[in-house]
Amino acid sequence: MTDTIFALATAAGRAAVAVVRISGPATLHVVSALAGKVPPARLAALRRLKHRGIELDEALVLRFQGPASYTGEDAAEFHVHGGRAVVDALMLALADLGLRLAEPGEFTRRAFENGKLDLAQAEGVADLIDAETEAQRRQALGQVGGALTRRYDRWRDLLVESLAMLEAAVDFPDEDLPEAVAQRARPGLVALASEIDAALADVSRGHRVRDGYRIALVGAPNAGKSTVLNGLVEREAAIVTAIAGTTRDIIEVPLELGGYRVLLADTAGLRDTDDVVEAEGVRRARTWSSEADLRLWIVDGFHVEQLDLDEGPVLSAGDWVVINKMDIADPAAASLVAKGLRNRGLMVTTVSARAPGELDRLKAALVDHVTEALSGSEFPAATRLRHAERLREARAFLARALSSEGLEVELAAEDVRLTARALGRITGTIDAEDVLDRVFSSFCIGK
Image 1 (cartoon, rainbow, N blue to C red):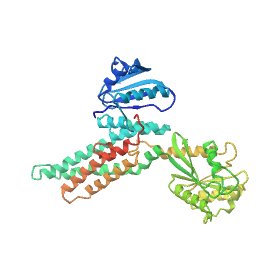
Image 2 (cartoon, rainbow, N blue to C red; image 1 turned 45 degrees about the horizontal axis):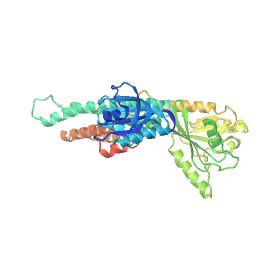
Image 3 (cartoon, rainbow, N blue to C red; image 1 turned 180 degrees about the horizontal axis):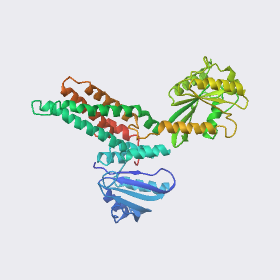
Image 4 (cartoon, one colour; image 1 turned 120 degrees about the vertical axis):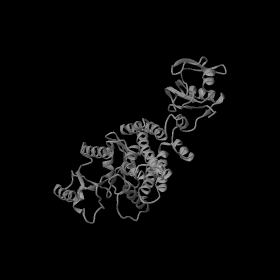
């Protein structure tokens, strides 16, 4: 890389301090041109920044000497006052000195290409910047710290060891090797297949921690879905009226429960209708709820005796039922319906969503449920769809290698090689340029 890049590393807009970072071979020249005397590496120095005889600002200047820097190159940071005019003047000066504005994720991409991070760690950096909840922070920090990398490296080491046995059988068939040396590779491959199977079974957990656990509020019109949503998020996020069919589109509201990000969705009331707009809302409601991690069926307690458990809503295992409007409901009828639903193995709770504090029990139950669903004893083996795709690819190659008993050893060795290659693509040990472009394009500029 022959060019030197620059970018604002802090958020745009008025602030007490703004940080502009640069990286590349011209770093020392640029620091000298703007700040005069170049400060020692890793020591902050107060300098007056000047360009073409014009004073820009009084700033803290930090210099990092490659390869002991984030990018692995010579790099520097200017900590200036955060006014827009100050930042703009510094950015114009850097451009005038021949530097190029960094592309999204280019600093981290240079760190990857210079061996400071692998691809999984680089993705963890992006997730850490985007983290909004404690769970997202923990997961991203673990990934930056190499938790994913260590697991994949251990798997690849096991594959290399197995491959060595297979290749020995291929390359030295007539040598005095231990009997059935190729078969000695099989137990390790079987154990690895089991670990990858467990990782694939857990693949949605990392994704849901990162993107949010999806909860859909579904039910008939006027059952109180919007009121329940507003009570859970503790603000007027959805319009509530006495008119059935008020909600006609998906209203998605982010919420934090137990340190995990949750996406709560209010949906159109489910009913047959000739209204084209409402019918589209019902279609969207069915689609969103079918893909949700949890569905909360909101039932109108005032009309609970009209709920036919055989002809009513299509309830599935794992759904929750919330019988609402208990302040005006017939307690005996509600109790009978709740008993029938519980006999089906469904979780049932009763509330009066409009009453203060009535949704506290439901919210506490949701916290417990989300925490149990997303917590785990081990760091998830996949936090992005890309990871899951490569794991499935690796498992397919491994299955083929294990099914080759009695066939040519060369075929099994090649499949083990392809398994290792698929795992290597997760950390970027082996990867195509278009994959790198896609990964780093999601970063913010300056990182």
